[in-house]
Amino acid sequence: MVRASAILLRNIRQLLTLRSASGRSGARRGRELSELGIVEDGAVLVQAGKIVAVGTTRELLRHAWVKENSKRIQEIVCRDKVVLPGFVDSHTHPVFAVPRLIDFEKRTAGASYEEIAEAGGGIRASIRGVREASRKALTTAVLRAFNEMAAQGTTTIEAKSGYGLDFASEMKSLEAIRDAANAFPGTVVATLLGAHTVPPEHKAGPDEYVRIVCEEMIPKVARKKLADYVDVFCERGAFTPEQSERILRTAREHGLAVRAHVNQLTEVALERFEEFGPASYDHMDMVSAADLARLAKSATVATLLPAANYFLGLSHFPPARKMIDAGVGIALATDYNPGTAPTVSMPFVLSVACTHMKLSPAEAIVAGTFNGACALRMQDLKGSIEAGKDADLAIFDAEDFREIAYWFAMNRCSATMLNGHFLTTDKAKRP
Ligand code: NIG
Ligand code: FE
Image 1 (cartoon, rainbow, N blue to C red):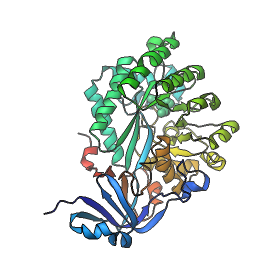
Image 2: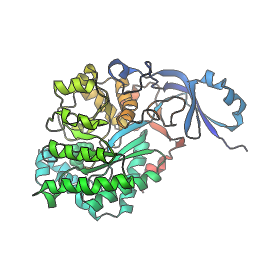
Image 3: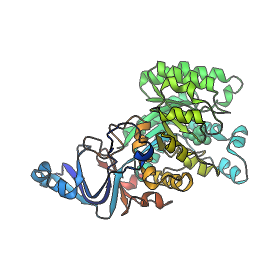
Image 4: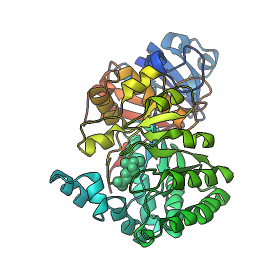
């Protein structure tokens, strides 16, 4: 028997290529955000982890290589499927040891996220679990989350440290991300979030903790190539704009790219961070008119995380329509974390974006794929189904793309291909 050396997905009911109509390479804005590049009765040829050809089934069956190598091609008929680029979950916090059930229960009794954090819950409540956990135990938890994400169609994941909050525990967290990434067929981008909150032992002198982030963590991470990005939680109760600036400047000096949690609880003028060229500003539950105009002209993506608003029981959501109308490039991500967003599901995030932020299903799909890739500056490899790009595909049991955001709290993703490898779904199950 000849071993299949290529895979042909054929007779796809709706193939969403997300090919750009304009040919521009940056984040999709305004009307471009609705362009799915749909091919009916579509086909995709994959070889050695890459997309080789894309078109209608008729076109691909006539493709010279397909004709000559038919015996070496495994064909998969996808008549009742929608196939789209794998989701790019560009904002996750997967390195934690235990869920935060006390915070959850307190919120049901009426306490707010900030009140809980001030009383010793919040991010600080996750520190002990991570400090005490072995790197191996953290790796297992991270890998389980990656596989659970992939089972819902995610193929590229940005993963932050940020619950260790001392030098050794932040390094251990990034090593756990690296070890999990090595055992995962998808693509992982690591981010140092040593500046997630000030740990209790530095509460009286937060600048000493900022010094540790800048003088110890960032240089080591850059030297050991443990992360591509540095993130900071610039917020009341976390880091001031001045401290955040110092951290982002230090990251740039060490050759690391930057991103920032901003405008979740309080508004900060974004102009001060512009010189560091952040790939993304995340949360953005509020935005000033000046920053809206600034973002519309910039390559920085606004990554919206509505699962956090949902889980915190908030009635407000990021002003997505205002951003789209102004021409801002927006992305959607889960924010997977134990405090504000314990979900791995991009389809759920798309659903919330449609119901609460009034994105159309098409806009939500582009924001969760191509624009997510832009938020990680990986749009040359990820986020659309085009020849030469990585073979990252999400295959849904659906006949119409709108179903992806329509069904919620259920998983209609029937298979995921990550860099040419099909996920075996049992890996996503808990042991
Ligand atoms: O993105 N905002 C800061 N970080 C997380 C929450 C972290 C936590 O509460 O554990 C977020 O929502
Ligand atoms: Fe976050």
